[in-house]
Amino acid sequence: MKGHRVMASCEAIKSVFWILLIGSFVWSVAQNRLVSSQRTKIIGEIEQQRGSKVITMIHRQETVGFLGLPIKQYIQMEDAEAVVRAIREIPDDRPIDLIVHTPGGILLPAYQIAKALKDHKGKVTVFVPHYAMSGGTLIALAADEIVMDKNAVLGPIDPQLPTSKGAVPAVSVLKIPEHKDWEDIDDTMVIMYDQAEKILNQMKQYVKYLVHDKSEKTATKIINRLVKGQVTHDYPVFCSEAMELGLPVSDKMPKLIYRLMDLYPQPSGRKF
Image 1 (cartoon, rainbow, N blue to C red):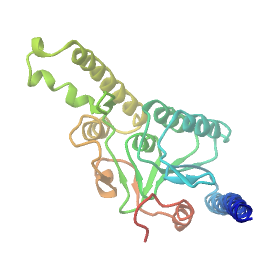
Image 2: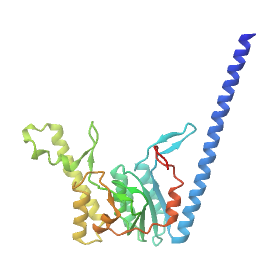
Image 3: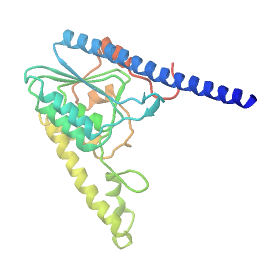
């Protein structure tokens, strides 16, 4: 008799567990749909006010699935597919407003997006409410206007080379012969040196294309500061410095952009 009661209790606990799990999943789905609806509404308001087409590329750490697992986001090939497709479907004369919030990511999709924006005939405005680092900055260079919060940042776009111990700056690899004789440099590092030289030249060409409508003096200033490794890869380029570089920057951020960002979950950590 006692054994039957124990089994019944176990079954009851299992039932409660599954009810809570399913309830959590349903609640998560409902919340995501509500937030998505609110985002769509604000995007529609921005488009109506500015007569533009809004595209978002917002990479924040979001919780997904019924277990609420965090996913860290960055620029990937899928971003290029989605954003370039969206740009292609926008009429040539319609302005594009791209809202960017990203730590950076893979170079190829970042440049694909940047080139598609640069080739668009209508005005392109890139909004940076918080940060658009690395590949995000490369995309911002394609804009006719970059609207930044006064405390928002862009960042250097000096290319990084992957190694077994993590990424290293290409410009630093090119300085190795200044510190070691060639006979003391192993074959792997010689190959890295060759790749570093190539990717740095490629990045210079990318930037030259994106800023070809600016003076040669301004283009050189941008390349020297952002590409050639004058500062570390995570150096923050605030609004004021971006203006000094000759970028078409404004600090008049529409309030609707902030409202939209509020609808994206905060990264993990302290919340205010």
